[in-house]
Image (cartoon, rainbow, N blue to C red; front, top):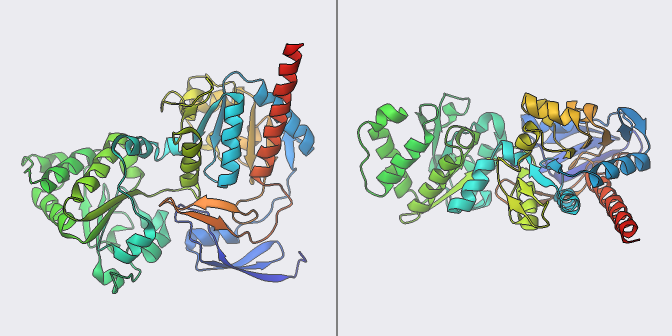
Length: 441
């Protein structure tokens, strides 16, 4: 594209957070986005700060290398590993995720996504209790009670309120915000609190007790008076909330990592899901996690439909085994078990525990990322890739499991994750066939 050429990309998709807003209007001048109409403050930063860095297409041991040489080195690392791990996936397309799972299957490794360090407990709870679910479109058109638990959407998902959950006018809530009651349950008064009708400050690490007290009240069982001292919420506050939940027309409970990553973890989420299920005896009520990364929901879906489980899956025996804590990446690294890794669109070197980072630094690993990170700097083989959504087309999943197509703004000189992974999978297959033929002779 000529440097001065101007183009407008309408209905572009923002892949910064799990809201995956698909109503962006981008003004593109050459290889730069100059305006992002409809984007929130996070989306504007995502689009307007995006520029293609001058970096080698690949490096081996930190030195620039050709794509072919890097693919060969990466394929040999993964094909020769005895306990390899594939990790990341939440910031790339479903098409690339599918190939990553195929690579993990081919090399008999563990496949894990960033879900294991955020909403992993929610994934376990869905398997234990099930999920009463709906789309954000239904929330927009129907919900008259919206409850946020352990979540701060004002800062983490700014357009969730204006586009989906509290502000928009819907078919059965024609007056928008006036027709809705918004409740916020959190351990502190966050930036989201002023926008809620009711703010309930709960004691830290007492979510499980409060949710079970609400379940009891919904079923007509009175909790003991000591519940106030236990949870920080008075019996009157709990009674009022239970009554509002039972008498609303369409209620939804959005829960964040304040519920899934505090004491109780998957048991907290099971309690929230069971509460939503119980309420359906009286009204329509749903529960949904507030997902962070742009396509972390897609990663859960792709790994689930490929293996039957959402994350932390071991394929070493030729069939999938699921065991969080044993096959999740933070744990396999911290215990020093993995002997090679493929890291896709993720930065474990920037956020894992010290033992996990030390072990990752001690083994050969391959990293794919559009930007330079602590993980790509330490990688044996690193590939520079195009940014999904801005440079590459494909499919991503919104936090409510709705697939949305991507409309890229401009092309990147770098290949997509899918192209690199597909070439890598082909080369690994060739190496394995060559080895099998050699063994046969």
